[in-house]
Length: 273
Length: 282
Image 1 (cartoon, rainbow over the protein chains, first blue to last red):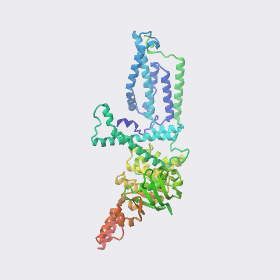
Image 2: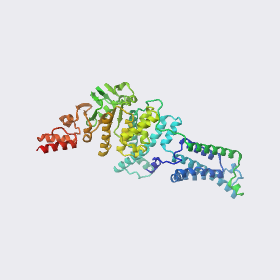
Image 3: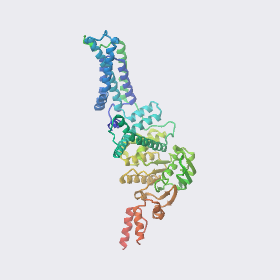
Image 4: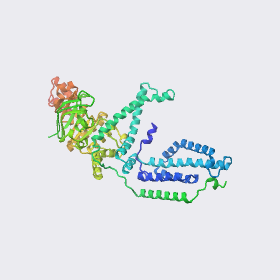
């Protein structure tokens, strides 16, 4: 059940983990906007390096690399489609007079495809920093303090809480059914999907039963007793949070300025090909 | 002074014709440690659900008769109003913890009451300490053992400072050591804080010594009610299939063979003392 490993969030403390999730999300959103603003490989390369210090400060390098590796297939796909579409409709590209036949023109196309791919990688790189360093508890709290109704926040954290429980249960059911002679890894694709029905049905029935017991327990602990409930924890902005806001705003301003007034050279012109 | 009083309580679940409990009349006094026992399906859990208003408010169905808990008429009050006085701990510890950390779970009820943060913090720490799990406060519940989880569940009910605590087979998912620990915690709540305890239990060997009142149910009705020693030595209890403590069984066995102990024991220690006395006299 390695798929569920990612959900078992452990309490880790670091400068980045302790940042307010709302601020972290703002920072990541600024990166997102910047990645959308720029289309040049050079600018996107600079963007790619911005989340790196956060990765190292939070000591999540390994998980971070793993999520990048997970995105590799999609990245290749984006690269290929961009290149192929560019090849067949090259008119929109500066420095290309169709058809694409010279080396320089091929390089322009390649650079463009690489830039689009890097844009995707930048998005993955920055958002995974957010998710790797924000505990679900914190995230739920951030949702709640952003005025999202408590019922939704509660549903969110409870869902996260029960992922490992359901994973264990799925394993138990699989073992039980295998012990009765169910062969999961047998037959063609369709057959294999069908094999999972005797796993799914008890899993769903159990989940429903579990939810009833949960509801009973919530009721017994005065769910809905007051209009506005309080919370044991509270998110408070600290100095590091203000610094990050400042950094984000400065980054955004700089990006808009560059976008308006500076023309970023493409690699091909820079190398004066 | 009675804290729970039912008169001819009869309840039928929706979509069922046969009532699950019939004409149940019980009186439970303040500060009592009650053991509620009887064969599976005899209506113990149903009765527990009546104590905090899950029946009739959560389950609907058909409730007849009178029930008053902590001075409140259960039918006329919402579950969350009754929850201030009655805490319910369920059988499966896993399904009553919903937060991502222990202390957050313990705070759940207090958050619902909209308690200010400082006061809540004090209450949570106090409840964790009473349950003996202060060191687990930041752990996620799913990483804990069953016994630890059940103690978290007890702490989360205790934090609301109820007058009455109802525990529905809290140890059936636990090993004997874990079970014993739970009983010790419950006993402390009863003796030190004066909380009225209603414990549904099959394994009376471990729990019997703490109780001062035993209620036996059978087929939806109250079969026997009285002090532990009275009930455990009665022929009826044996016929119903109550899990009579081994110590008491030994007492009866000896009695049959003409050896009379001075008192009816419920624990191994008591039996040992009584036997020693007899052997000395011989």
